[in-house]
Image (cartoon, rainbow over the protein chains, first blue to last red):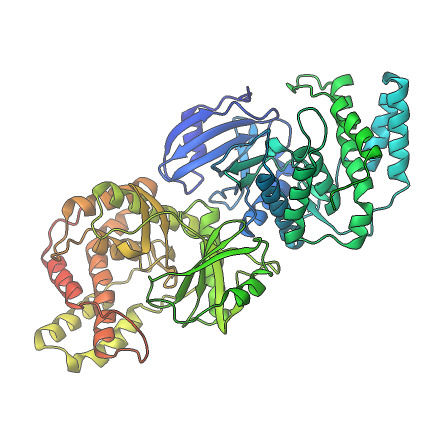
Length: 312
Length: 312
């Protein structure tokens, strides 16, 4: 369930008067997403997704909404925020920051094909290229400093083996500097459930609320760790190769990126192992998260440590 | 035929490398439009319309392309220009200024229904509202000064009756000032062939290359003169009423606009009578225009002069 905040049609009509979208025809709650409230809104002019932000403040939204608008303008498939008559992408509705975005036609998949992985890789590379001219900046809140600090909260709660592994992986990452690698805008959470597909094509990337400026290759590692991972936790070589092939056709990797790729795959796995451990051991009060299994990323780290072929 | 300039796939691939749109998959000329060269361009990421401008210069394009981008951003159905990696909407290709815009799904109609007229009226009102926050400016090149000057070239070539009518209509318009009416961005050429429809809905307004800043009501008059005109030249009251009803539901007309509406309908007809007379008597060298019958607008003017019910 993802309608935490109820919007009634009359209230919405008043709010819509600030847009050039015609008159309200329909309003329907969307039962997906775990952080924000989402509705389908139909007007005489079209169909949109209304998001009411349950955690982000109004002043935090411009980076994400301007980014989506910028990317869409450059042909990257993602929802386009609709501007109101004062040229703003967001304003308050029912006491929450709210925005309207275009409605995409597609669905996510838990079991992507190689062709779909190739298309997602290519679109991620397009996102990385299009991000070049985006002028706003956002630090990655889930970087090395965050995982080091988080690890200290987690160590007392882990098994000896897990504690040792986490320490080793953080040491490995600390001993690597990625500052020389190409950086820019990254989605930072390009998992299968954040991509809508239509056949083999990408209908749109969604959920940009972890997007930030960071190393591009880190984004690729996060995505490959998810798109090529089978239900049993093992990696599918064909899917990983297809993803990277699609990506490199649009943005070839540099030699330095190729060198750092194995360590970066482990950085991507580390980041999500840590956040899932936090969700498990320190759940946020009142947050209706599905607690996902942290061990999936621990096992992925262990597998990456043994891996010899990194699909390049 | 509207492929005046030939683009070969290799040349296009080089040009597309400046975009974040993936790789070229298909290229196909479009046999519609009479001024510019248009192609469908398919890349691994999507389908676009490529326009090579045969008359406009590169430095004349920003107004029109930024306007389309602005309107699309506000939810007005129209093609969205795609920005390249330098954040430009247009650059040179095959010696011509060229741009890519999103591909709309729909078709124009010569015989609209009342529901379609209502939808077009509503979308035109949305365009007028969304134009409020557009900051670039363009004078209307087809205003009172233009038709007065053009009339002097035409008088020697017209029948006595047509000459007398043209003089009277120009005098009538000269005796009216519209400066007090709401002004803003207008399409200025919202004829049936410049609107793509999908069922009863507007899929998109196209061909913004007469767009400018002028009196909003003038845009409504131009559109109603076309959308409600039957093949025999008479006006269909039901279609005219439906168009105005759709428009006024989104942007109500002021009392002053209602007062000036009958004279404005004649201004809209006068503008196209004059331009069609010019096309007939002074055809542009090398321009492949279909010469359209000027008498349709003369007859419309004569009918407006007799009209008592203006559908308000």
